[in-house]
Image (cartoon, rainbow, N blue to C red; front, side):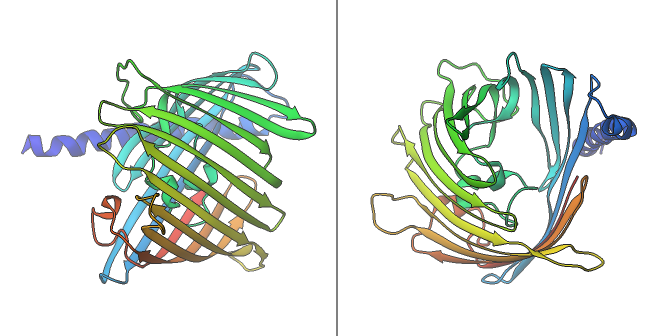
Length: 346
């Protein structure tokens, strides 16, 4: 009887610790945010709660889920050092530590981060729950690689003529999060970014991932986006080449856009229709993608300085030419489906 209760007690213990940390920081957050001049050390609390209801029309199955429940704190110790901590309380029922990093800024524009942090491969608006355009991630943000690892990242912001630019380089264990393994060959990669989030922005990236004797991938890709005050369009292509005979290659791309329409009601400030086409292919040398997907959605949202919410309704049409192992966990993974999502961020 006692043994059966131990996993639940451990999980509840982790949840209690996380909530206690949040309450402690929250009790001091208002004075820190109201300060007019920087005071050190300082911090800011942030969080994401993403709840979903799904219906797979081809199988007739339903489910409710808490897709994400994240809480984090970030701040500065002094004028040249910062930290970041983020916990996932429930990712479809699983607790995990996402970010645990410290950053030094020795000169203006240069930052050096050590710890568990994001690898320089994915765009935040494709993989971060609070920034995504749809309830479900694009294929390349979900099936290619974990978005975080233990390692080191250097970032340098500069002007290329008059164009805001950034260069990133990272060196990692190459074994995903929360696993500090000893290795001879580490993962490494970089990304070059031109432009910013308003107007045109483009990036190119490459990442070498030698995990073990059977798993060694090389990732590379590029993306382009354009955003104005009330609309944006984004596209990206990424390829995963296997350097061993135990895995195949993957190629994926997406094209998505959204338009924000102001709305004045008691609950919502805007309505945002969105459209996405994405595809993934396990046989890049053969014409046509194995799986294509069309996603249509509409979101009703609210924003202010410290809090935002969106009620999102999406429908996905899957067009399967060849079945893929990444969709084999259950029949609902590549089924046409309706998703109702309620997302809060603060």
